[in-house]
Length: 167
Ligand code: ADP
Image 1 (spheres, protein in one colour):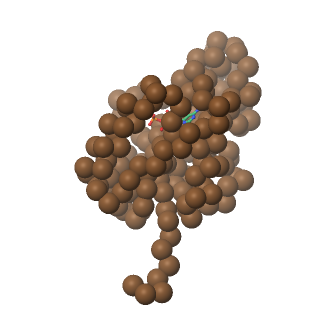
Image 2 (cartoon, rainbow, N blue to C red):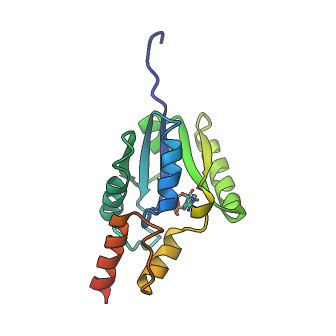
Image 3 (tube, rainbow, N blue to C red):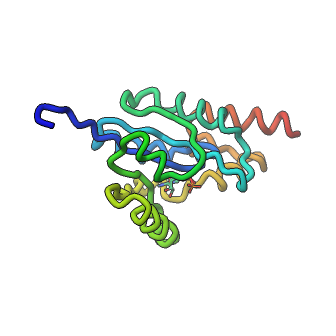
């Protein structure tokens, strides 16, 4: 329609258990390109998470306060339906190494089949973040390692609280 404003909204789906500085780097880069980004935290019934869905959403909200066009949501079900519902124009994913590539390529192709008008856009994090993963962060933190340089401060506090409650 002539004169209509198109908002370029992208969805960044993931487990974010918990959000790391790698995820934040991807968001800092992608939020400059899209008008709006929804970080969609996946409720995965088969994957046991350390942080609850609510906790994961809150940790991302607090870590992305400096990014005014980023909002956070939780979702379950088929990503394709969620994208359609939000009228998204792209899926955002991050790439670290070639190990990520194969998995990400299959998922991007599957999503393309399910929702052909939406493409996946990949961002590479800066080299100082490429080795960071949520699982490595959890493992290091639970063994007493200092993860302060790998995650936002609220996540470091959250991990410390988990350790206190579990120990
Ligand atoms: P999922 O379980 O869906 O892979 P994650 O929270 O582990 O969820 O990751 C979400 C996305 O962010 C994935 O595309 C992943 O490759 C990317 N990602 C995670 N950590 C980093 C990082 N350090 N640098 C770049 N991309 C990353």
